[in-house]
Length: 562
Image 1 (cartoon, rainbow, N blue to C red):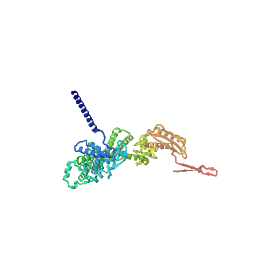
Image 2: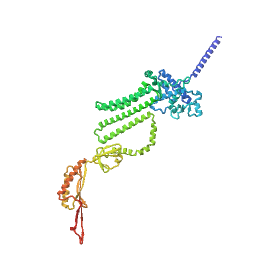
Image 3: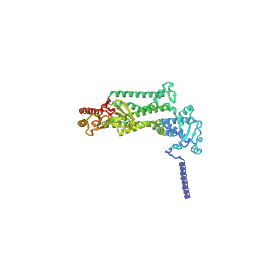
Image 4: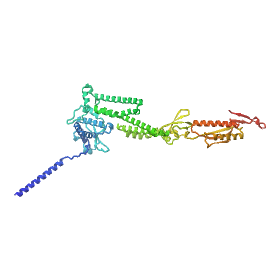
């Protein structure tokens, strides 16, 4: 009997243990699994609306509890919106405000029961491509492509009209159990406690709302703009006085204004966030304006810094370089400066939400038209490059071109400037100048003296030999005439004179010195001709008049043209 009792006891314990295990396993099976990395559900309009509303409610609770994780929950709500058309520069502020506005709108509307909002199964079954909340324009659409393909988001039109929807429903009460987006609380500047105390003593009209912003806030924004403008004017005045004073470091004064413009966005954000704590579309617009000013300051500062750096490099490394190398280095720094400033402008436009890719595509489509329109400009630019690399002439060279001559004063990216002998400036496009037959008179080490002497036919053979011999001796003894090549020779019988050729080189490349040498040679030629007893010829014609018995030499007339 004892054995039987013991057996029954063991059986009872065994049954109790099995029951306990079964109960425990049932409890574990009923406990929902915890997946901390699972993303919020946006697989359908029903899921997106639920995620959006719950995320903002949780974010506000965490915000009031001063828990920094509220930003994560607010991010979950913002990702329920199609924010593709919001400028990147104000993306955080604008997207947060749109989310709060839309939350406030939805909490004031009577939404359909969850069962009537399509879920993922209904979307797949019916092939729904967009869904609009009944009796509203609030629409949800699926993402068509990309990493988030298939997620349902509030459309870009809904995002753009959030402020309008809010103004239309803000007089309605919240639906039971809903908290709203706390838009009015944020716009009132409740967190700027100092200013709130000041508004309590202001007139009632000062607390009136205009365009989503209170009058006192408009006044503060206007005062902010005025103060920043006065600060820039003051900085510019100080920089100008310092630059004129010629004190130590006066060259840095020109950096004052671009530095001031560069810091305008930070100064404006500090005043807006720390003092006024303002939301609203006017503040976002003001931020965009401040950003434009800041980017202007950045581009100005970079261009100024690169220019000064280029001047320093030219003074140090190109101090004794040839003018063309100095000019080429200067143009390279100018091109680099333009390129860097262009990159800054493009990045700034992208941050401001300008469709840079679309603009580039548009330029690509119109590239042919632009190329045709700018054909002469491109030709001149390429011609300038050819002049820089080939260097047929350089700055300071005296040259002949297109039946003209002058000194090259500048070789730019578009044109060449030449000062002619009559001291006028001629501007020739690089493309045309590169095609011309150029004669660089500065690069030669000597200048040709070539003259055709015309002696009278009355010159005797002895006189001609004497002239040739003395001319050769004169050229050999002249210290400014090159030894070789040179010659003096009887070149033949002309129509009215005996031709004598004089060929020599003046040892100089300066045009004024060449003129003096040639003048001296020609004067000595005249002296030698006269010393030989002959003269230079004048155009002469002899006419023979035929008589009855033939030509009579005595009747020939000698007519000379002066």
